[in-house]
Picture 1 (cartoon, rainbow, N blue to C red):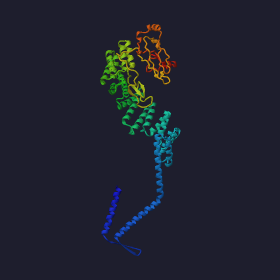
Picture 2: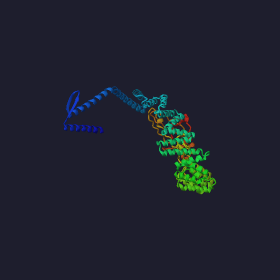
Picture 3: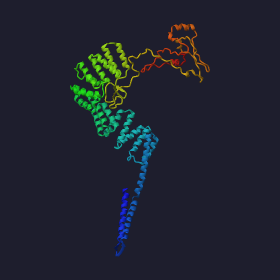
Picture 4: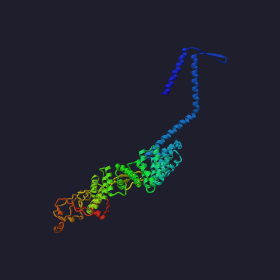
Length: 556
């Protein structure tokens, strides 16, 4: 737009100039080599303009002819480059789609059209194609070749890292991740793997430096960086608590400052302060963490903050902790345990039952069982409470990647992931909790297994099985296998005991409930083999004879 405007301005100026000369006639005389030439001023202006335009055109033609070889070569070079980038783009799309044959074809075409030192993506396409073809050895060689190029070094390290992980060589994978983290700490995959390695070795200071380097790049959220730093500082304080009390105090207090609601940080900070007889400051930290999320270890440490306190003093501290978080099962359990130690069985029972009403779980029933044993010594009630505890939902615990631990750890023992442990209820047990007034049957009623129709069909003929009415039958004899394989086109009749004397003799031995009437479904008493298995009982595989016996037709 600016160029068009400038062109219009120039044309307008030339028009004004020629109009101005046309309004002012005059002559122009030029003497050259003894000759005198005279022309009007307008003709002279047009002649000068034409000479200038001719010179410019001549200069442009001369320059174009002079540069024509370079222009032609440049045209073909650009065209070749465009074709190469088109092949490279098609190859990358094919590699992403998993088409190894097309990716290899496009890689060769791109390598012919574009120099590999000018376009590093050709090396990436070549390595990806090798991976698609299953030639991992060649792919690793190409990734190693990328390490010599500063522009491709991180890409090569990433490829070697993934190959090492695929082979299960964790040490080599972490080696490449460490090299990548030194160059670019903002890379999440490199930083996480390196931090996991340092945490596994207990190198807390280097892990903290890497977290700080991540935070300085502004590629990581400050909240995430502070959370990681708090976890590492807590682990460091726990590791040096018995050897370097001053260092443990500095690390624990900083961890608690970053995350006041983090129970492990508050616990280790309070332990350090309690060892230095700073009961007030340590208790404040525990109270803050308790308000955020009640935890049994916080209650235990808070109640026993002073080793020389009497049992009633510990009960008072438990009640104070309960006042900070009312109507919570952990608060009631803390008071119940302290009351049990103090001999206040009534208060302990009330708090334990209150915890069960709020959240019936394993720990509450165990506390109530301890109270029952200490107060009454009734072993029957104790066993009843213990059975309820077995069937009750589990207490919260530290869980990471399916692994349940009684104590917190900075990383998962399964995957090595940092800050993986969460305080939550593990996976529930199979089965339901037995309520207090719920009647428990001694033997479950088992329905008779349905007879598969396929066992009664032969040669695709449907066989109707109609049992004859039986007034008095031997129930014990009905459980014996009866060969009732019918012939095609005929109805199968059940085996019936026709000996009335033997039937009457056996009937006297059978309870009256076993006497059956015609057309009444009877459920036989289950054998031990028919009783249902417990959820965690793998059972025993039946032998071939028993399996064949079950498949045979029975009347009842």
